Image (cartoon, rainbow, N blue to C red; front, side, top):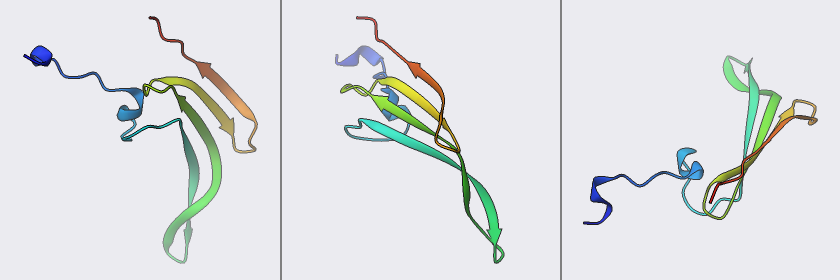
Length: 80
């Protein structure tokens, strides 16, 4: 019996809703502004850079302010 009824554990990349081999993701947060009665992208509030290992596990997260300066950094190390 393959798997014995256990669901395969999702990688951090899969939890983000991405398929395939991913080295990094950049998430950008912007203000919404109204232009001519429609919503449009305004200035950037912040952005986050997520880095993954070859198995899809998150290893780094860097958070940046709107001016591009580093706001925070987290690093994960997997126990073997």
